[in-house]
Length: 429
Ligand code: EPZ
Image (cartoon, rainbow, N blue to C red; front, side):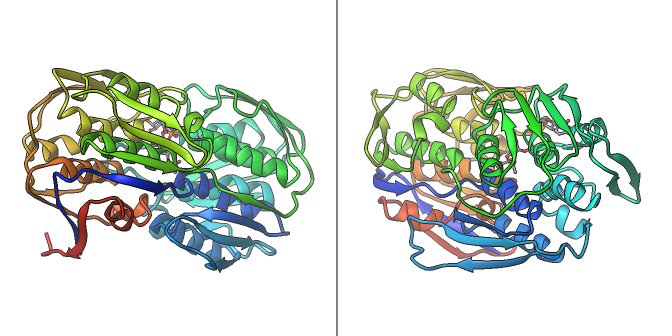
């Protein structure tokens, strides 16, 4: 078991390359199942979740090849998913339980093979995360759904149809979008999620020959085609990683140039709140220059919303920043039912946070104090790293396997901008 050790209080300055987006890369890799011709993806981040999904795709019969040439701190890896033959349509429990995004193989397998047997993902730290919206959508376009022994079996010929999501769901939108591309008919998806990762997926599917209109809106129209062909596609930058490092710049009183294209758009929602907190941004020809433009971080009221609102995946990181705000802030989490597990750990560093249902009130304090803390989920672990960067003294962040799921080369990236940070063996806790 490893931990991250941070000696806080150092200003971060320099340029930080933003990696390919985990939450775009995962559905894009699943899209590789939709064609026999092979799908080559560039700028894929080196993350645990990418490896886990690659092993699942291999179990299903794909051949996965990597091209590491030229990979340095600033560029991702190139991966080709060659799904010439699908040899299994089952996504087993031991993989799905580790990574919920595995359910995104459901749509492509169902569309390609007429059957998909996928373990129900079960809950995770931030909520029970059902997949009812996915399953209803598949039934709406012709599939038969059976639940047995903790698995869902989807089968049948996809005829297309109208899907209306009662709740906005990123994964359900992605799953049905991929399946609809090969349906024998047209599909309308209403109240679709509009996250930039879905636009990235849709653009790649179109490059593979899919017929999709309304991309970027909450109403997608898909005309099924008989097959999709090969293409190469480059993954968009990770807007949550970018937002996390923008917070790091503000909390340490430093200035970072985040390197990536189209950051102002993909960071919509995040930038709006960070501006209210006093951060200033200047676009450069390489990305976005970010620093705190006021004496102190200003208190804000933030409510997590689907895109283009303030993203739930930035909630924990914003809370870390608000522990140092001038006055008080209120953050309300509307997407997941249990996404405040970073609160007790931040309080152990001296933060003054009170949770009342889905809202947290944060009263700004002078200085956070370094401490031994424990990561509980991916974004909570980042909020503890951010707190450690700003705190007086040394912070040990334990259980950093959570962090390795979503932040590529975090220690190298922060170290290159002046942080005193290292990975060390931890006593097993
Ligand atoms: C995606 O998860 C992201 N993961 C999450 O990022 C992100 O927090 C979430 O979207 C919201 O933006 C990936 O893209 C791999 P949802 P997803 O379906 O698709 C409920 C991270 O930190 N719901 O939009 O699972 C659900 O419980 C991760 O990178 C149902 O009730 O999220 C939640 O309350 C964490 N039934 C809400 O909808 C369903 O069938 C939104 O979930 C599906 C979802």
